[in-house]
Amino acid sequence: MKALLTGGAGYIGSHTAVAMLEAGHEVAVVDNYYNSSEEAIRRVEKITGKSVSMYEADVADKSKMKEILAGEMPDCIIHFAGLKAVGESVEKPVEYYRNNIDTTLTLLECMKELGLGNIVFSSSATVYGEDNIPPFTENMPKGSCTNPYGWTKWMQEQILTDAQKASAGDASGGSAGLSVVLLRYFNPVGAHESGLIGEDPKGIPNNLMPYISQVAVGRRDHLTVFGNDYDTPDGTCRRDYIHVMDLAEGHVKAAEYCAAHKGTEVINLGTGEPYSVLDMVKAFGEACGKPVKYEIGPRRAGDVQDSWADADKAKELLGWKASRGIREICRDAWKWQSSNPEGYGK
Ligand code: NAD
Ligand code: UDP
Image 1 (cartoon, rainbow, N blue to C red):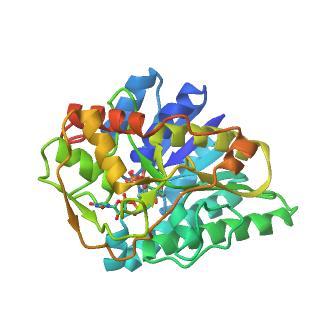
Image 2 (cartoon, rainbow, N blue to C red; image 1 turned 90 degrees about the vertical axis):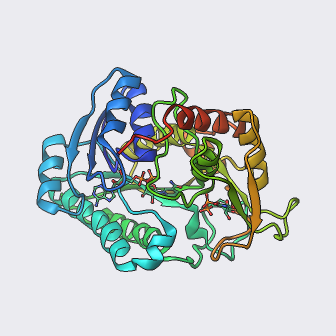
C-alpha cells in the first residue's frame, strides 16, 4: 500500500516510516519541521535503502494538503502531526487546539473531497484520565484530561468517530464508509537499533527517557524524580514503556487493518507491563555502564500514579504484540544518544 504520514519526520513518524518501508509499503511524508528535521527522513532512507516522497507543508493548509493528497492518493493516511508538549499546552492552549484540531479537520475535508477513506490516528493513553484503574481497556469510558494537549486528543478522537459514523450512512460517494483506527499509545521510548534515528526534543526534555539519556551523556547534571511517596512498591509512578520500533510495527499492522475494514476501532499500543521511574533509571544505568545521577523532588502536577495497557485487543485484532523489553529500550536509546549527543543538530 501507499501510506501518507503527516508529521512523518518526527520521532514516532520516522520510526514508522522505517517499519512501513521494511514491510514493503510506499511512504510519503508531510511535515512543517516545527519539531523535527529533514535529516530524520534522510536517515530513514539510509536505514532502509528506499526513498520517501517528502513534502514540506502545514497539514492545516487545506489547498496545499489537497494538492499533495490528490497527487499521492494514499491507501491510508497515518496522522502523527501535532503539538505534544503537555506543559506548553497549558501555557498556549489556543495554539494547541488550533494546530491539533485544525490538522484533523483539514484532513477529513480533503479526504471527503478526494474520496480517500482510511485514516490511522495517533491518540494517547492520556484520554483514560485519572479515574480509570489500570490496566486500561479500550471499552472503558474516556476520562477527564488534566491539560489542553490531552483534551485535543480526546476531541480529535471524537471528531474522527463522528465523521466515520456519518460517512457510514452517506452512500453518495466521497468518503462513504470511512475506516478510522484510533491508536492509544502508552509511553513510546527508545530508538531504532541502528542508532541513526531517535527522539530529539527541543530544549529541556519534559519526558523521563530523553531526560535520563541527556544526563547519561553529560548534557544535564541529574534527573529529578517527581515524587517517591506514591502507593507503589518503590514509591515512584509506574508507566507502560513501549519500544518505538514495536510501536512502529504496530502502525504497519494498524494501517493494513484500516485499509481492509470499515468503521472505527480504538486500539491500545502498549506492552501491558508497568515499570517505575526508578526501574527505568536502573535499567538505563546498566545499559550505559554507569549509574544515572538522580535526586528525589516533589510530585509533578497532573501526574497519574499508574498507567498501563491491557494489550489484548491489539493482539486479537492486529496480530501484534510488543516484543522488546526495557533492556532493549535502554540499549537503543543509549546507542542513539551516545552517537548523536546533540540529536540531529538542528
Ligand atoms: P514529534 O513532535 O516528534 O512529531 C510530530 C511531528 O508533527 C513533528 O515532526 C512536527 O514538526 C509535525 N507537525 C506538527 N504540527 C504540524 C502541522 N501543522 N503540519 C505539519 N507538520 C506538523 O512527536 P511524536 O512523539 O513523534 O508524536 C507523534 C504523534 O503521536 C503526535 O500526535 C503526538 O501527540 C502523539 N503521541 C505521542 C506520544 C509520545 O510520548 N511521543 C504519546 C502519545 C501520543
Ligand atoms: N518523570 C520524572 N522526572 C522527569 C520526567 C518524568 O520523575 O524529569 C516521571 C513522571 O513523573 C512520570 C514518569 O516519569 O511518573 C513518566 O513521565 P513522562 O513525562 O515521560 O510520561 P507521562 O507522564 O506522560 O506518562
